[in-house]
Image (cartoon, rainbow, N blue to C red; front, side, top):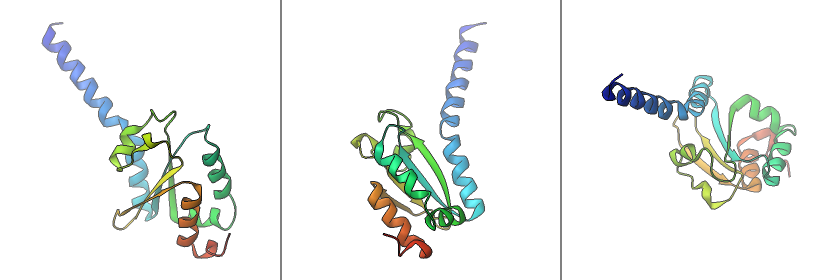
Length: 137
């Protein structure tokens, strides 16, 4: 193998990795659009108590049913604010600010983005967006 072949192979691998990096996000976005659902991109971590609280709250009715009917959820693990920063950057989020959970809602029709930071803000937005859940406290 000559140097040119090795360099070309390396370049192909780098491009393939870069293209695959956001594949999960791109697939979730396409799935949401196909289903005519909003996409909720939730940035969090398994060690985050606020993220755990949000997960528990999203299981309660009628919010749970409302989410399943109108929203596709895509969770993004940010680790110690050092993972999946490419997805955060693509959505205009500076996750290094240390505030999780952070959620970006993408409209199925227009792709318009709404960003909410923290469990309270995220839940409030969801409850306002879901008529059956709007009277929940």
